[in-house]
Length: 284
Ligand SMILES: Nc1ncnc2c1ncn2[C@@H]1O[C@H](COP(=O)(O)OP(=O)(O)OP(=O)(O)O)[C@@H](O)[C@H]1O
Ligand SMILES: [Mg+2]
Image (cartoon, rainbow, N blue to C red):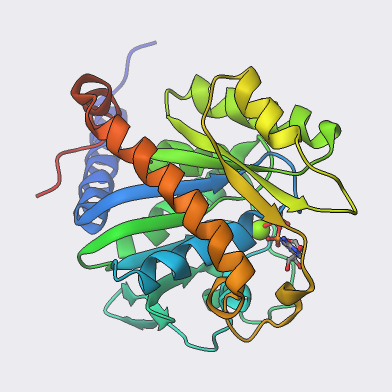
């Protein structure tokens, strides 16, 4: 079937739109030095908690940090951050909200009613995430921590494709069943040719035991970044727990030491990085 002139024009216009969209995204993301996704296919393992605390930890160390809540179905990172701050939007641009030195953007900021369920279908997910990325002005930041949606379907896939992440931190729990899901998560990331930075084991302690995360990391020849204990301290949601609990801070000291080493290692591999960066357009 041959295209008539009208179809050809429509197709051209579509290509131009997509091109402009990609330009806008790379302009908006161009000043971000390192993008770290926090992910697990399994829900409830503590992705949001880890993303928020890692972001707050890095901000406290003096880095310029952004937090993107990319969980568009049930966005909740702002609540975990413990802030009522809202982003400003003007002229179609979004200025992230700021709390505890972290610049945050979440779909929940644009929800009319927080109790409402958001139902996204394939193309809508893609559009929403694209829009979000195009419109946000992050400014110059050292780290963007991305709280990923759970699952292995459209939403996490789209985020992984649109945002060229430097790598992912995979969160798992001490139970071996969770490790199976984590394996799935890691395989999905690897299929997309993105780095897995390492594994974090959450909910460690008397209740659930410990060890499955380290075992998984060893199995897959990945760095084990550290353990995070199950603690009542997380009940206080007025601020990120890492800022309030010395025990949690110690855990993040260890995680960051391992993560920083891994990031430095990856940076020293120019070829692999070129591949990862070649997926997007050159930022201007
Ligand atoms: N180490 C911990 N100790 C105690 N409570 C924790 C810990 N980590 C997370 N939690 C709590 O567990 C609940 C689930 O955590 P969180 O929302 O971070 O999981 P998630 O993986 O992001 O979930 P979802 O898949 O729904 O996005 C939250 O109420 C959080 O406060
Ligand atoms: Mg979450």
